Length: 300
Image 1: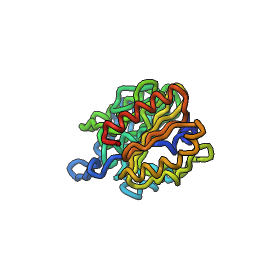
Image 2 (image 1 turned 120 degrees about the horizontal axis):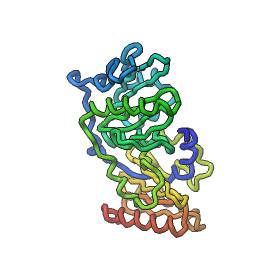
Image 3 (image 1 turned 90 degrees about the vertical axis):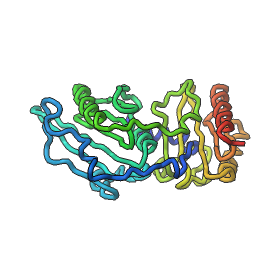
Image 4 (image 1 turned 90 degrees about the horizontal axis):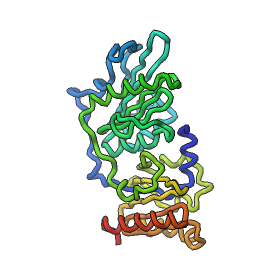
């Protein structure tokens, strides 16, 4: 499924998104001349039959838009620092582009990968949440999101995975996913990895016409992060954590009409907003479990 199609599917649940990490939980990774990000890319010939074409290119900060103009803002919402990329070719004129994106924390790297991870991709044990699909391989590890993209043919899957393993082997940090993922019940989840979003800007390109409540009513801001998962029984569940309980309470009011009509479930629990896109039995069970977990985390 393309990223565009996946975003369209998110539209039903994006107003119900979840999770927040405090600034104290977002350690900034300092760039070091002793350990430049460029060392993560394989040298020419590191994978048999593949030679680097040209040089390694680096795009720090806003220069990222010189590399990926259309998608640059998405990366910025995940506290982007810098990126490096290089092209590789073989004697059949097939190509591979290997790119590593450094962000501020492992949680950011997880989120960026969750945004781009192909829903139909084959899981592979490369880094964290590695996925393989038609000559591409994506994963995250430590504060890095890595994308290996080649000619879109399945015969290059092994090559894409090989390049990805070379990069993953140079990243010592494993990293942990956002802690708020634990707020969502695991049973029945069909989203892998669970979607983690930081800021409202990342939602601005989506259509909210089918959403029960508009994004403006949710009060999303720089202090709100979000996780959302789809479940096999065709509903989405989310938990939104706000800086304070009052913001969560105001956001929950936006769902009042839809909740009263029986269309969905939503409840503010301290600084958390738990919500579903359905009120059917399976959704209610997952919703109640998420509410219980929110209360255990200090919600009232």
